[in-house]
Length: 373
Image (cartoon, rainbow, N blue to C red; front, side, top):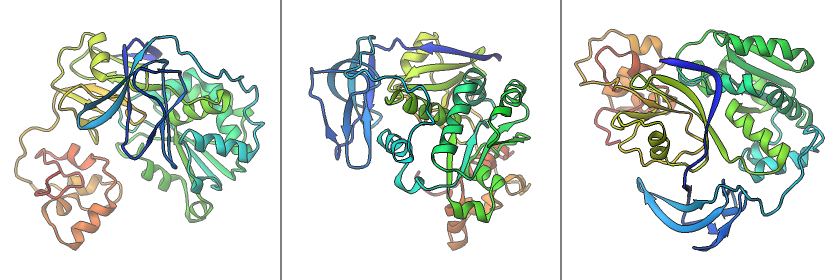
């Protein structure tokens, strides 16, 4: 697989964009109406959903048992209200900054008074390189955003965590962090679990930090914060990896939020659509079909051979327990349905390492063997 290092490719030519519709939300547009980019599409008391493009509202459709509002993209990205660009993003008051981040669903009320900030630049799956690519391409913007959050939100301690194997990323950060003394760079040897949010928080913090309250973002989320603070608009792009052993490249691609995966695969002439995974092979999911809509939760799309073949009998090798980052017993959790196994399932972070290392190919991750999930 040829990795096209540190380059970002655009796929912004989808004719139709699909944004989620929930029945308990207020819909702010009608079929046939024109909607502007960043115009409020639906909302309730807790969340606002904005259009990522400008174009015509075509109505509702259902894909994979989820309802979406379909927008015919006019490729003009017209804004109803064109706002000025904020020159210095650290000039907000705390109330102004937190109001903006809540407006665009980035933080909740309980996050507002957190005093510890953790930024993860470590891939959640070892083949992904979205975070490091964004850090290399937008170093100053991302560091300015971290600095603004520290200053405006009165953060006491800030950690920026990256993998020491991302040499381009390490070098560019070491060359720039001298002007950002409040950012504590942490380098980690990569293992299967270190990119997991809960594992990383436990590695970086102690009891005192947790009492202060912890605000956690990955680099993709930090890019969204930069957009919000700089332009006061809803982030309309998703950055993701397109890769796999059935294609000959690994690319970071920028797409419009609400793009259909099928459109993206057709653009790259990918015809093998029976082995498509999203968000890696450890704890990602295999798609039953590629008529699937891209949102902020998608980090990567893999076109790969199945890693799980026919399950065999457990050989009691102990690899699942040895490799579990939170020290539970995945084998016991999988084969038993008592109170002990239920407690294990409550603690399980769903990282998928146990299933990945199992030589018997048993799908151990957080599931009792007879669960209908």
